[in-house]
Length: 120
Image (tube, rainbow, N blue to C red):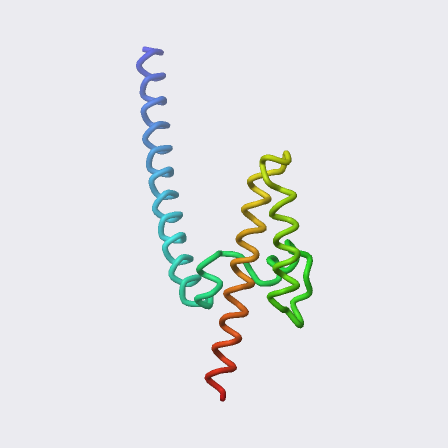
């Protein structure tokens, strides 16, 4: 009799847990879909390309966001990319972050240049 009660409790618990897990998964999937839809509409195209903000890119390359010039950024990029190469014992992850930061700043400078051309 006790084993029958124990089996019944286990099956009931498993069923309740299964339903709760399924519902939580549905909610998480719906939230993720809604978030992706919202983020895609809010971010400018240049930010979506690299998934890094301009401020973060400037911090990574240690440059000021105001008065960006490709020459100053390129110098910082070359130094940091070289220092973090695997041959010199650097980190591929950091090197990738430096590359993405440079890519983001280039996209921003290109966008600013296009905007200035359009205004003229």
